Image 1: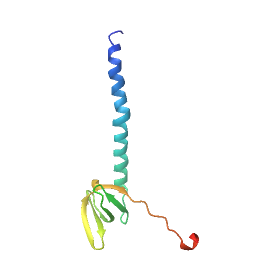
Image 2: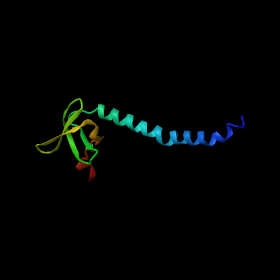
Image 3: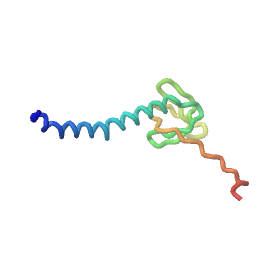
Amino acid sequence: MSELVPLLPLVAIALLFWLLIVRPASRRQRELGRMQNSLNVGDEVVLTSGVYGTLHEIGDADVHVEIAQGVTIRVARGAIGSVVPPEPVVDVAEEN
């Protein structure tokens, strides 16, 4: 039993590393994959490069993103970083 005591700090460090780094990173990766699989035509997205656009066409490995009127680019599905939530509609009459 006394020969296992020096190993306890190493085991504790490994456990702490897993809890603080590996587990959250795998959770983020799972959520990103779920989001990329639930894309729909017409969604406004932000690419990982920071480009905003609207999904025009969705394929298995790639998507077509309209970044300006009449300008569509083809990017890998993994390049989509997030979906932009729709902005709430503000009624001008309610503000006054």
